[in-house]
Image 1: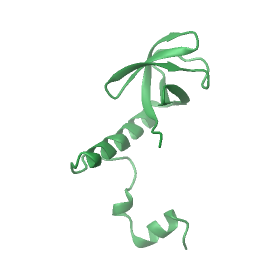
Image 2: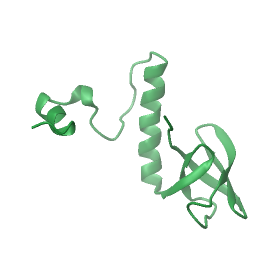
Image 3: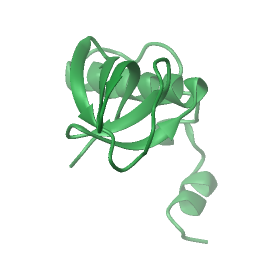
Amino acid sequence: MCIGIPMQVSAIEPGHAWCEGRGERRRVNTALVGPCEPGDWLLVFLGDAREHISTERAAEVNAALDLVQDAMQGRRARGDAGFELPSQMTTEQLRQLSGQT
């Protein structure tokens, strides 16, 4: 499974951008998203930018990734993912989410 990582462009070069996010800096291929500028946010999968995203969307994805990281390390969830987690949904909401009526 691939997980998209929000990364912010810090420098550009032909066909690539240097991006920072989640504690790392990497050179990202930008062929699929076109021109970028420093300060732009990109959703990055396996070293390739797949989508330009807003600052707000980057924060939402980072919050969700923080929850996943906490769960994988056995810590209780902290913060808010920006959406209701299935564990907090009613039976009816879960049926709707899964396409059951």
